[in-house]
Structure formats: structure tokens, C-alpha cells
Length: 120
Ligand SMILES: [Zn+2]
Image (cartoon, rainbow, N blue to C red; front, side, top):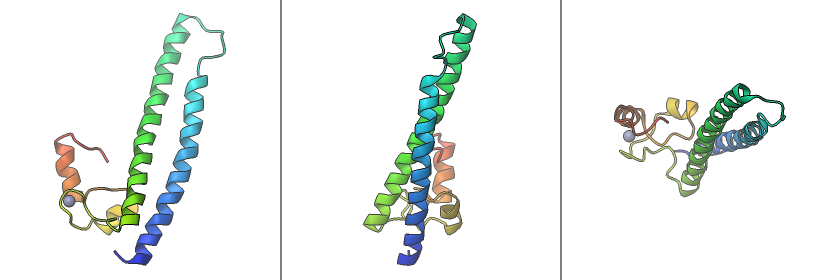
């Protein structure tokens, strides 16, 4: 991949990372403060626990995404960015545009998805 193109994705990944971190903090605080108003009966409590778990699940998904972004930035540093970690072919430009932290090319991803190994 050309250095210029690499730089473009580096910037993109960094802004995604910043965005994700602020979103994560927000969600995490929301989840923690949920149902802490002290005025709930047991039905409220069950509902609150359900919602809290739902929010924490989202936090987890974002945390995984953040990890993938970190790894993509590392691959940019080491010069292996944009190469599928499974078959070592170039990842399609179109795919990187949509998913800049993609680790797999489209073929490998759908193959791994079928086996239930990866979602991203
Ligand atoms: Zn591949």
C-alpha cells in the first residue's frame, strides 16, 4: 500500500479511536448509574438489571472494536496494514473504506463467519 494511502487510514483510525473512547466512557457511566436512584421496587430492579446488562454488552462490543483499531494502527506502524492476516492477500480497498480495522479480506471473512469464528 502507498504511504499516502496508509496515512489516510491512519488518520481515519485515530479519529475512530477517539470517538469510540468517548462513547465508551459515556456508555460505561450510563450503565453504572442505571437504577441507582434508590426508588425502585423489585420489578424495576429486574428491568434495570436487564438494561444494565444490555448496556454493558454494548460496551463490550465497543471495547473489542477498540482493540481491533489498536491492532490496525500497529499494522500500519509495522507496514503490514491492508493485508489479510489469513491468506496474506491485499484486503479490498472498498472493504477498508467501510471497515478500516479489517483483518481479513472479504473471502476469508465470509469463510470464518460461516464457521462462526469472527463477526468483524
Ligand atoms: Zn484473506
